[in-house]
Length: 254
Ligand SMILES: NC(=O)c1ccc[n+]([C@@H]2O[C@H](COP(=O)([O-])OP(=O)(O)OC[C@H]3O[C@@H](n4cnc5c(N)ncnc54)[C@H](O)[C@@H]3O)[C@@H](O)[C@H]2O)c1
Image 1 (cartoon, helix red, strand yellow):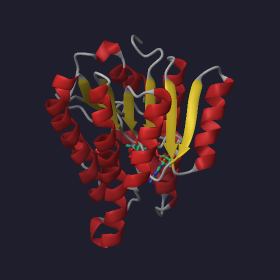
Image 2 (cartoon, rainbow, N blue to C red):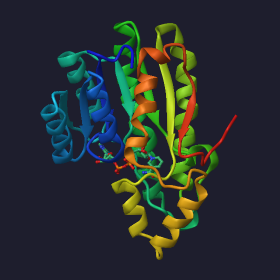
Image 3 (tube, protein in one colour):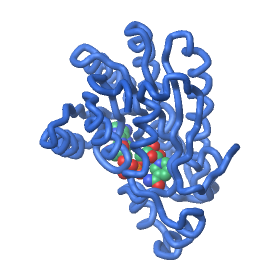
């Protein structure tokens, strides 16, 4: 894609799942990628894989729910490599009916899924403004567009990320920063497998998910990076505040 070669990106939660697939794809496109992940060995493993394939990537151990850590990590990345592209990918949830959740659970879900991107963007946007512009792509979820049973608080956070991205797209279009959102549907990642382990009949639920998708299959991590790379590229220079579902037709919104 146009305009990616030589750029510098941060991918949060890039140590596994969808984030790792995004890291590999951006590196293939010639981007220098810094992986922020709380699990150091996963971030290092992805970076080693990218570097072995001739790419340029770096790993940083960051707890994205710690505002000071996020600030230091972004400033360090900017000093070392510059900063052009921010991918807010990290997320977390468990399937629990809302009335069975607790305030501590709400705090954890909100901290990872909503507060962490706030910390990232609050630090990164002034740096992008100073360098003349940039691209922000946030991974939300179809749960944030259409709701999802057993994921009420998470769905609220993901809907919040969509409204946040649209608001920032309006505030910062004059700074040449675009903000777009990619929404996966059910996708086979360690997070999704973890959900399945927590339910009484995982095969039945997996089949229900599969049947709910018009294209008849659950997503794979590699279904997502093309859309992310597009929004990060110069091909999407005139696109901002948009939401794209990459979910086999699960969510169709005009
Ligand atoms: N898998 C799905 O079915 C699905 C569906 C819709 C949306 N999503 C979204 O896609 C994104 C990626 O999900 P995934 O399925 O690949 O998840 P995953 O759990 O497989 O990977 C998430 C990564 O984020 C990291 N992370 C979590 N909390 C962190 C923290 N506090 N600090 C730093 N790193 C942290 C994890 O260590 C992990 O490497 C998430 O935003 C998720 O909400 C996933």
